[in-house]
Length: 166
Image 1 (cartoon, rainbow, N blue to C red):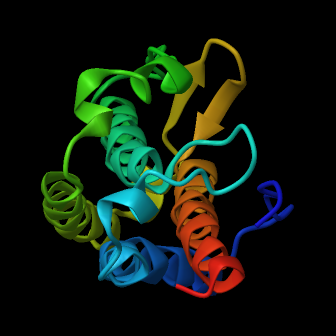
Image 2: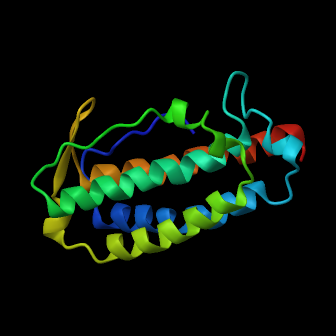
């Protein structure tokens, strides 16, 4: 899992691999939580960490923001994006509800996102946005980060299942 590390140079092969990871993430998340009880969904993946349920709701929240950031960058000249407080979002009432709506949202969002990513031109991949806390980011950086982000949170769930023998 660990932290995201961006390669110095990003090849077409890495970009294709990241797009494939974006496309696969909803299926992998659904498989990771398949058959879990409410009690299991409400288990933190680590001490003081989010519950599995919060993780499942967090991923589409985060990825909606990613898609919007990318679309702003594709349609505006280096827009300044709005960060959000993910820890506070994870405490909102909808983060404590059944996971099916978030799994369905993740599937639909990633289907649309994958189409966008697969059809972007070389010039579009160079587009940038300004993150107030992190500085200027381009499309490749954003793609790599969110491909990792999906893997990262799916691994939280699958490793918890392994540790708990679920």
